[in-house]
Length: 392
Ligand SMILES: Cc1ncc(COP(=O)(O)O)c(C=O)c1O
Image 1 (spheres, rainbow, N blue to C red):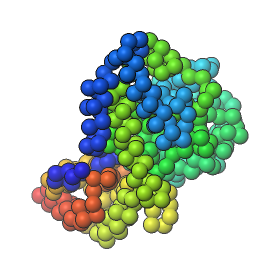
Image 2 (image 1 turned 90 degrees about the vertical axis):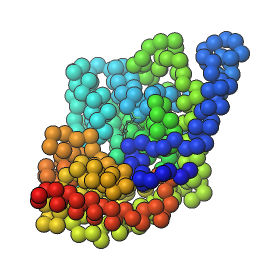
Image 3 (image 1 turned 180 degrees about the horizontal axis):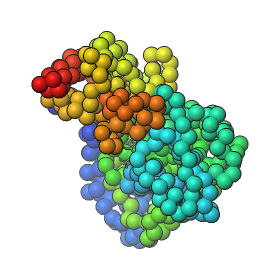
Image 4 (image 1 turned 90 degrees about the horizontal axis):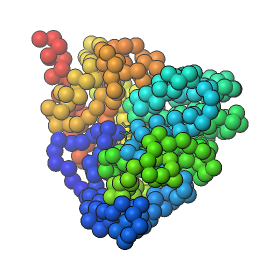
């Protein structure tokens, strides 16, 4: 698929639905529009479609079909994972990393109102979890760690093997927010030391409004939304059969790309090349892990801190607006707080001005390497435009 100009480098926010995904959804909506709970043929056609897609999706994620339930997206899956398991216990302690997505922070804030202790585990300057500090916090009454696997703003990929092993030996459940990971590296739920895993379709060229939660077999989960007993009683509401089909089609495309490239995302070399060229510009620094040094980072993601010529941090949000006028859609990466400082960058140790100077480029399969050729020059023009505005 080719996108019109301007160039879209904001895949971590959302991605354009793939043509194949739109075709599949339209066909399924026309053919299997019935309610999967209905007992007549229209319902059976929808139920069959839904269960076929559930099996395919689960297989691509290394899970059993019974372990996969559908939700409206990442935010709902995260809420369901955290509240679904915690509501079965008396209040205890839940751990999060200090660099979680706002959806996780919101779910934990609700738990806090219900008497739970919420503790943030610190990260290092690259956004990677401090495993020693985690270990010290795993004793009772800790019940659950909810962790962002691939950080949306700074790209850090947590060491799930090491973290999961510690959670397992302490008897603490582990939920992964894998929203940025699924589609960009193979995920094998069966072999991961985790209990719950959230993902969403719209980050991998699937439709908006559909996501999934993998729940380890045997783990009991209370529903957040009651209703007609759908999703084995864990999520009420008539199932979005066509959206599920679109999500399956999107994951199929992503899985095929990974398989054709020995399990790694073909976007990584494009990203590395762009990163090298961007870092040739004065006043730009990488934030998060450095993939060129073998540090663990989302393969389609790069994030920068941007200074002006005199070394003063610029506003990432203003840069994004200026870049758009240069024909590049990017992001400052953060759901910002007052003054534009990113809580994620602050948790990594950056001061308020630096933490407001973040810029994120996130790539998708619609890009060819030559599409990126003009990006460094566009950034330089945007920065120039901003510096002129500031000084005038
Ligand atoms: C890491 C992460 N978690 C959760 C979400 C929320 O997903 P959704 O938009 O599907 O609710 C996002 C989306 O921005 C995300 O990047």
